[in-house]
Image (tube, rainbow over all chains, first blue to last red; front, side, top):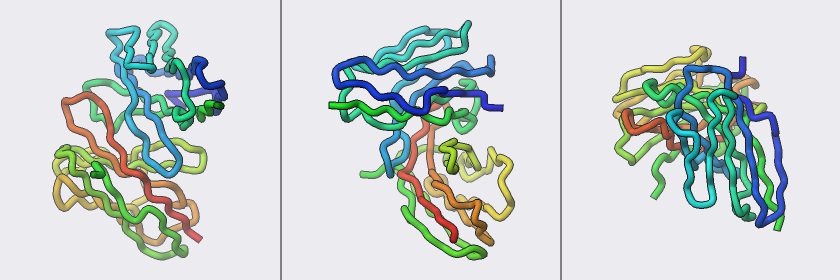
Length: 114
Length: 113
């Protein structure tokens, strides 16, 4: 049972446009959500997070939106830059549990074309 | 200055061999992890240690044995390697009580032939 799903394995956008990456989860116990970015031959790096008490968190060009009723979150990157080309993983966890219990989606490969 | 470092980065070995992957973190974190990313790209937790104590042990063959000599190190030893063990193994760390952010190493690409 895949509790965190990223239904789009890949996304291609033009430089300067908005990139929207989506993530759905099924476990209502999840209350903390993170996005990680991964370049080839490197480990994932933390990008942005959101707690379930919020519906939006913004950090520069990156904004994460959370819709609890739909069990859906999305990452918006605007404007997109070629350096944003990477694999993006969504992760979900219950905040009072060990971080290692985070459940990861299987990633979306973003390609930003110059 | 690498925060979570793991060696080797690439490892090609024959079936039946025993191999180890080493991991060190200099972030002062109290919790360390091993993740496996398989051919389907899923990141799955294998083990978690907090202050040298095993706290997460997912369903992993007992050919895999983690060893934590101190809270800055978590090594992964694999006995009798099988073809299906080929994957990327990520070491990671975090600090309990500071949110659920995990800091990953660069990964170790293991290929069993």
